[in-house]
Image (cartoon, rainbow, N blue to C red; front, top):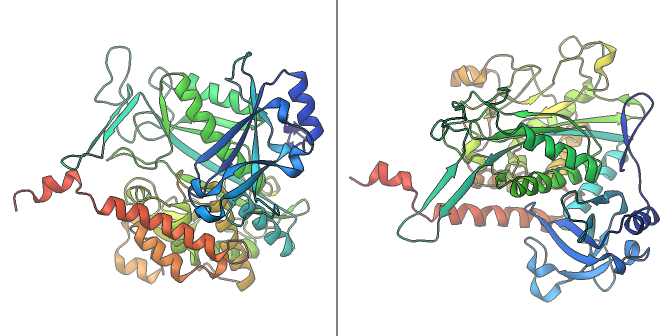
Length: 488
């Protein structure tokens, strides 16, 4: 099991070796090995090989099975030969595979063929370089805790390729439009924590939690129904280090989608599938450590027990919030979420309890017991982002704040949504981009803080992929435009 429980009750990750993995494969009669990795936008990709083809050399020499030109954001057709090198620490047995076709998975690093150097646009490599970046600044470790929200629907259909019409339809037994007989409706914005039978997805989420632990050793704190109607869910994973948590988010999406499919449902991390209700975000908490001490904690700080170093980290997040949006909110649909009225952040500010700010310092605990959980919560990201790139970019922004001693200014403890423009100006509260195109422009003008972890070609690729999506959506008539303009 990748996680082991320590004597004090905390969890730590057991580093499996190639020999450990091969022994488990042999002893458990595993037939196939799924080599998984992420493309640049964040979609999981895979190739499956017979378990008999695995040996210890596989973990050093890799598997030559990848045409990089066919993976979004990777390479051109004239430089396509690539190698997948599996990481033994990511081993897991797929819980829903059958006994006759039993298979496991390994997340793999991407290398160039004919030399085997690491591929600079391998998103996992970017996350690994981010770890080296904070270690070079004198920190020993970091902890990450994303809150990954998602929707589970009964069915979804769409028609977008017809030039004479475009439509989509979502079906959910929880929605007020469809709840009948044994199902109770969940009204808009009233989906937070309802008990069964109103919450129809408790067993589904429990199966996901069990699969994450049994199959992949990913520990979860809790699960619950989220604020929106029609099946919005959240499963909270126990905090972990940067690369490992990015692996876990990729696995989380894989598990939630597969368990839903097995039950005849469909799960999505598209941020805003439903108009008029809350969207799915991914609030990302992070902290930096020096040995056993949390560098963000200061018991003498009366406001939030946040150290000066932690304030500089927050300052970096605020300074680069607009540019970060192109990476942590990377779809046109992300900006349907970043609007007032649905608990999503719109303004660039920090606070301790105020959820209308885009950086928050949670203060559930106080005193010495607060040191472990002390963290900065960046509320801008959503679940469509690539976790490897998102965590790496957030860290780069925070480290830039520490290096440059960027003062975050005074915290905003008022409801920012209700402030007048003049009052926001007095408090130096800026606004997040209103569109993907605007966020890409912000990244184009503010990317220096990413250098050293992100290569220039990767930054260009991120912007190109984003603009492709922006152009495809912008070029098509929207159904609501007919309502607004057809009679002109």
